[in-house]
Length: 74
Image 1 (cartoon, one colour):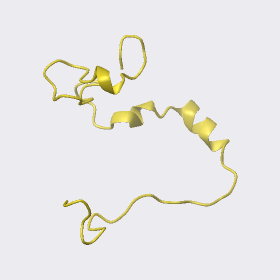
Image 2: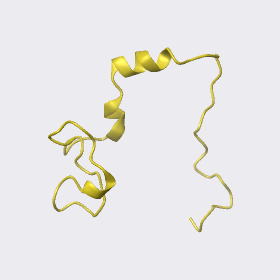
Image 3: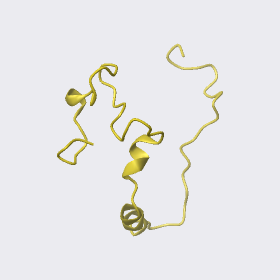
């Protein structure tokens, strides 16, 4: 995060000189492996839980082999 305690805008990337253009590498430290999951605090999880209205789950994960055939020449 920046010295101001906020996430940088896309135009402010990279956050560290020498990193690839427009990359956020190093945003949460050189050894970070989880990226923006760092923003998930106990307080934010508790607040999100208050927004639940129904006990339904909608998973957004998909098998790595899907879609088949791959889209957009991947």
